Length: 438
Ligand SMILES: Nc1ncnc2c1ncn2[C@@H]1O[C@H](COP(=O)(O)OP(=O)(O)O)[C@@H](O)[C@H]1O
Ligand SMILES: [Mg+2]
Image 1 (cartoon, rainbow, N blue to C red):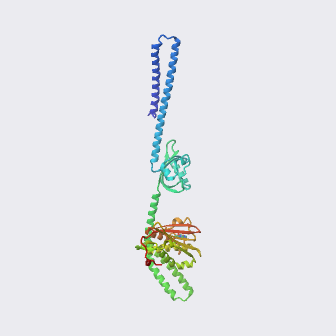
Image 2: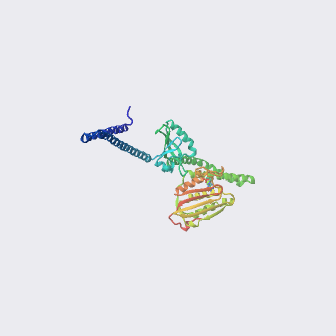
Image 3: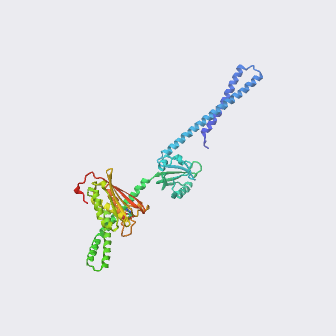
């Protein structure tokens, strides 16, 4: 059987041999002293001589053994410290977040990457229950532990962990049984942050979805456009000839519905085929005025109060395609109007800062439910009834802004109102008064 502790055995062999040598040496010295100085000594003197030999050798032995054992212990403590430092070093070098815990999830080890990823310091978690498992993942964790305690590691599972500041983090995790003491008693969780990977995957999915929908939209729009135009013409002609007021009203409704379908088709086309942009310096105040005057009838129908606060941006321009910028404001103001009750308020503000123009469209309408906020801008997402909403407005607005290096933020409180803030880069070119069209 191979010797498990050769060093330990050598320690005791060296101690025993060196002790025998010490005793041998003391005895030899005393023998010499006796033969040299006490050859004729009496019995009592020799007696004391032997006693002193015993006392000296036991003292020497005791000192030697104590020193030897202490030195050995210090050496092994040093080795232990060194190997612990090495093990901590390796643990902290790992780019993955590593946590070692027992079956009660009480943390034993926590590396530097875990500190960085989850925001908890080592001191905050060691000896405490693992704080990073979100409530909805507790059951999953118990299943991982059950699997790992049977010796089957859980490998490369995508899940979520909760950071100290409360954010949920997407991670790819491995839960491994750790055999330091009894098997299955300790577990290692090794996780890497995959938020960026998930984001890219979602973007890719979105792009795929948009491409498919773009193709679909183009086909649908193409097929519907011509029959819609001829239907509208026929209804308009029919209205001219009818005498009956009831029929005229019906035809009016029909005309309205056809116009809605045409608008939907036009938006689908906008969505699928981006026209070539014609950029020039567009004075923002004038563009907003022309959009608002175009929307006059809808504003009147809603008896909405519109406040304009644009003096700060007077004369400021953006390098933009006029049609696109008009479409952008049309979408935002239509949404605000749709959200209003009768006699509601819309405030359109405009100012410049940091070489950018900031436009705010604020309404005191119905607001947006928190659960709907993440879906804003998704093509076809609408909360409006069929026949009213297309769900394409905000996604077209987002595309226009993207093409003009702009951005949009929407803040909303349900039943209180919504603020849509957009930003566009200022044009460096000044706008000539004759270019301004109101
Ligand atoms: N100002 C606003 N107030 C309340 N809800 C809004 C506002 N702007 C957008 N929304 C919400 O966003 C959804 C998507 O808007 P949009 O993309 O323009 O499509 P649509 O207006 O056709 O529904 C709307 O259905 C509405 O629920
Ligand atoms: Mg809309």
